[in-house]
Length: 189
Image 1 (cartoon, rainbow, N blue to C red):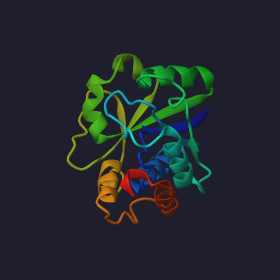
Image 2: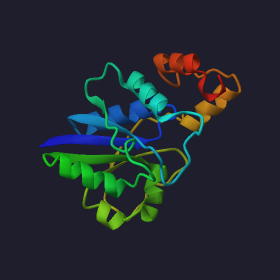
Image 3: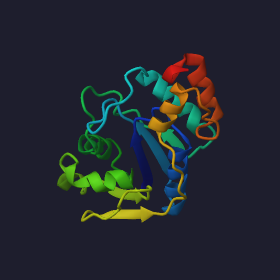
């Protein structure tokens, strides 16, 4: 059975924090692959209105290039309306019945698990993997495997804000992603 980690998010833009989490979970749990799964419309937050899905997808391709274990799973980009994890996992389990899925979440999402859509059904479809995030608790009554990941306090919103202010984002995200952002004049660049 193939063991696959799933890292969902807006990836608006994808940064080294995403890559570090994916890499650490990949090796800690000895997974075969990590699938980055960009959402079209996350139910719990707004994505940037100025950046199109095609740009987020291209930035993600640039960010993961060179790691053969990292793939993109675009299933949620193809759906209209909010992307609920329970619906996505039903579809993935049906399509890939020979895979075992591990859904990677940060401590911010661990705290939010009781509010996830159909969480009691979802915990039977996927194994959650929690990673630490500063200023969040990782206490929950739900079954979550924990992986220690070196702390890197970077977020997509912080990067977008820095770019709007003309501040440097070097070493926060891969250079090809920075080049793409500048070329496409994204995030106020």
